[in-house]
Amino acid sequence: MVGVNFFGNFDLASLSIWLFWIFFALLIYYLQTENMREGYPLENDDGDAAANQGPFPVPADKTFLLPHGQGSKKVPSQQTPERADLPLRRSAVSEGFPFEPTGDPMLDGVGPASWAPRQDVPEVDHHGHAKIRPMNNDTFRISAGTDPRGLPVVSADKVQVGTVTDLWVDEAEALVRYIAYERTAEAGGGTRLLPMTLARITGGRVMVKSLYAHNFAGVPATASGDTVTKLEEDKICGYYAGGHLYASQRRQDAVI
Image 1 (spheres, one colour):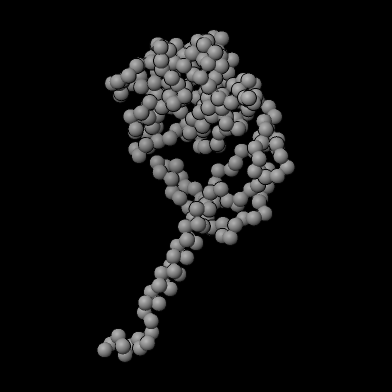
Image 2: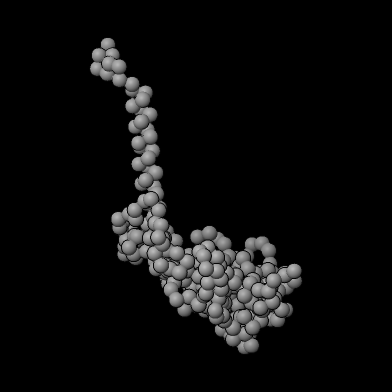
């Protein structure tokens, strides 16, 4: 028989299982190195290179062609750099402990109010158009629930800080992402965006529990009146979310 004469006493089952384990080990190596295209080389809390970089080497550059004429990007060498010179100080000598703000954390964008240095361009859909746009172009309409346009925007300390003028919709998802409102003169004036997930529409008003009236003067603005960039989104969301801790000293004090 061919099998007996050609292989003799060779164990094909053993060969198969060893080939499987070798393939599996190579697959793990490949997946782990591909996972290291962002965030590596590792750094410690101060931003210096970490002593232990792990058992796998940083992979060679891989070029990605970006859609809609945005060029190309090589990673890991062209990965987005981390923010530097943040106004923070260590709260402990060893690694792994939180850093304490040394300035105004709401304006500095640190801790719960932190933001990442994303691209300063709008997020686009598969056609290359900006995903998030104002609803005043009549593309969408409110089909259920309360239409907040015209309602007052009220802070956590029950002060009216503005009036809702429009809703900004993620057109690809048909989902309201932001509430646009005109601030009162006391709050600084001008139009600002409020993340829909941090607003509560109740009792004929839009409540913002994360900020007090004096915090609204520092809400980040958008450069354009009909688009919002990914960097602006991060700063806006970080500011409102950070108010849950940093809006007042009372929120930062220990509760017994």
